Image (cartoon, rainbow, N blue to C red; front, side, top):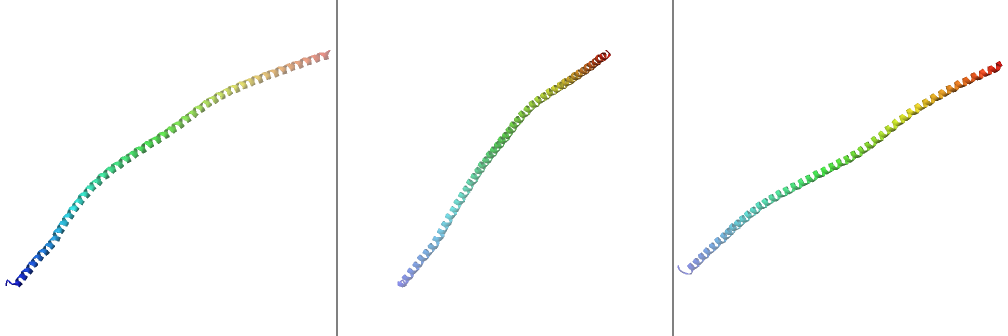
Length: 170
């Protein structure tokens, strides 16, 4: 029993043990490698989650800042629109005021012209009244003169008739 066959068997047994250990090592190596890979992946996943959380915070902060900036711009636009509207209203009021002043000037000129026309009309009435009076006086004077002439004619006829009668009597 201690012969070559025993040695061969012993050698085979050792070889098989080494092979089993190697196989176990080979099987354990991928398992350890897989555990390590899983661990690394979990760490990468955790880092990615942290980065994502930080990016979300950064995005939220930038969004808030952008919203504030936009709100400030909207407020500035509102103020600019309000100022423009006030300027437009002021311009319209100024234009209306100028028109009103122009109309007031025209009304004053028309009042002056009306006053002058009224004075002219009063003067024309006075002149017309004076002319009527003068015409009546002239007509009365003509009538008196005609009456005086008629009387003078009548007297001269009477006198001529008397002279003619006297001459006839003689």
